[in-house]
Every structure is written in C-alpha cells, then in structure tokens.
Length: 257
Image (cartoon, rainbow, N blue to C red; front, side):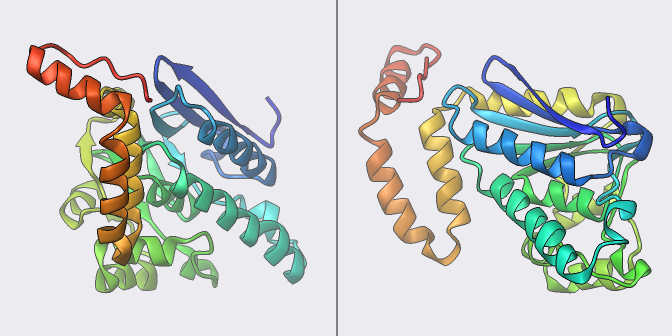
C-alpha cells in the first residue's frame, strides 16, 4: 500500500463496506483517498444490489483524523480552494446524497474531516471510549467539509458552536446524549454492531427505504416528497410482496423493484 493510503470497497450480500485504509497516519485523508472515495460512491449510487453501506477506518486507534495537514499546508490559496476544499465538499455531499442508507462505524477517535465524514452518513455507531471533535480553530482555521452545517442540523446551533469554538473533544456518552451518536458499542463490537444495523435496514423494501431517506432529507419540502414517494412506492413489486408476506405470515423477499 502506498503512503498516500487508499479507500476500499467490499460488498457482502446486500451490504457494502467502505474502509479508509491508512492506519499508520490515523486514516488521515489525502487527495488520492478523496478521489478513490468519490469513485466508489459514484459506483455505489448506480448499484441496485447494495442496500446499505457501512463506512469505517482501518485499525483500532482512529476512525479518521481528518485531512492530512501535510497535504494542504503548502498549497497556494487558490489551490486550497479549487483542489482541496471544493473537492472535499463535492465528495462528502455525494456521500450524504447516496441513495442507500449509510452508517459510520466509528471504532476509534474522529476529528476534523473524520468527524465530517461521520456527519455525512445517515447513522453513527460509535465506540464507547471514542472521542469526537471539530478541532480546526486550534490551528487557525474552521471546519471546511460541511461540518458547521451538518453538526448544527444534527445537535443544534448552540452545541455546535460550543464544540467548534472550543475545539474540545466530545466523549461518546455525551455524543449519544446530544444525538450525534445513534448507538454506542464496545470498540471491538462497533463494526459488527454497524453491520447488524445495516442488515436490518437491508432486509426492508429497498426502494421504500431509499425514498424515505430522500423525503427526510428534503427538509421543509418533506410533505411534498412524502406524497410523491408514498404514491410511487405503493405500486412497486416490493409493495405487493410486503402485503402478501404480511397476509401469509412469512418473511418478505424484497427484490428492489
């Protein structure tokens, strides 16, 4: 593996697992890794077989330490904007808009861009001894990959300001209390817990799940999206199978059609 690290995808059944693989550097993101992640996400969005996605980092110490400082500190300001900040926004937005539900399996600490990746996922399973933070003000900058908005939307403006202004890491217990974490698990069980949650989601009607995600993410337009998506899903093969399985008292066999 190159010192630049890599991002890999494995698919087992209906569940895809994206892994940021650079454990010696706490899975800090390089331009090459961002490019690989974007390619993976583009492929997954077109993949009808993958019904839920788990995002994790290699090794037990860190989920992701964010952007590799050595990669951006020497950039010209215009290159910082054009090649780093804009690319990160594009990739993280692609993750947030992915059709399939996404679960961040945070086995270790997540800081800066690492936490921003977790925030771009739909759900977060976090190790009960992990810490999380947007620490950019400590090096004279601000979260640059969507963290300010996504953190605000998730935990509220006041708590987001406290985290970002002070840069103080958040404990897992507090993350759960604030709604940042969906579930806590022992470090050794984070990935299996996230995969179990992914399997539960993948067992539901995939078109309905994906349209529900779209309706939730539509914000103030949710009432319009609900009308459109509920009408559309009512005439799918999966809807017919769901009704049949309920009537016949058997497990549903959804095909995503």
